[in-house]
Image (tube, rainbow, N blue to C red; front, side):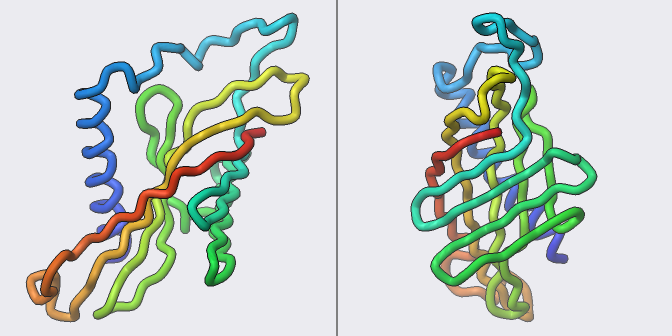
Length: 168
């Protein structure tokens, strides 16, 4: 049930962003990140670790090993670490990904998920890290033991967090 709710939340956000990008073609980059390019004599390499912060949260996400993903989430209430199958990773357009985790589950009350948009990023191999901007969506799903039809008012509430940081 929890995985289904996370999947549905991811699907809703992905659909919304896809509709936004279709309506705003200038929001889509035309660069091809699959191609390796030469930058001032240095080969470009894709990054696998992201250190991000903004809007009261911090996120460290690593996909160095696709079979051992790691995500650390920090907010004013503390730190939560996720690894392996606790992280759902969905490939989006080109090399971008969407990582999602279940932050909190209180059956009959609320379920809170986090979706991190992981952009594809290349950096010169002689450079330690490179700047990156992205976003995360924190979804609060109001729950009721009898199901969503017993929830009065808005069932899904979304908080968008604009994040900046470094990718390495």
